[in-house]
Image (cartoon, rainbow, N blue to C red; front, side, top):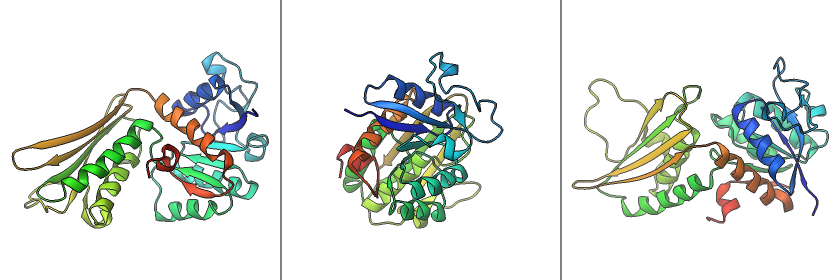
Length: 268
């Protein structure tokens, strides 16, 4: 079997290092490129240097050099960086696995347009457990459609720059879609002062930032006399890495198209 040639964006970051390590440990994958932003002190160094496992792949800021041997790019960076990578990958037929969060409508539209030129797996959370949780939320929302208030609470480390998390927003979208609502209309993202009684059709969000929390998400379905909570808690980013590699394998026989983790896991 020919190994899949995968490049990693943000290779010197926390998630990037986890991906480099996971790819290096897989029998059917090979690290074929590593990217980082211009000015990064990691440029020109081996992508596995900080892990004590040299890969022979140097970290580059130039896309042509960093992606010269790659057939796939896994990207967990920032929207502005991912969109630059997206344009290059679409033009050169490089498949993408995008775990970046915080895209606006225009960014999401750009991803959808690029998927007409290359295969893309785009999901706010690559964890297998999180995506199974999404399916459970879909099932729960059908049963708790009346008489239950819905609140989503998420917690992440102090360095996360967007809020609510992409995963929390996706959970809200899944629930809203199941209930026939538009999250843009029913989502409540802040409460302060005299807010009045809760709109029963709303979906509330609460955000916690602190320490080194990898990612906790809880959805409450609060009724009169009972409360159901569905939670997922991450203790390591390795779950995101393994999900990303599973996504790369899924794209192996795809030339174009936009997919998500439901497609990868067969949860449709």
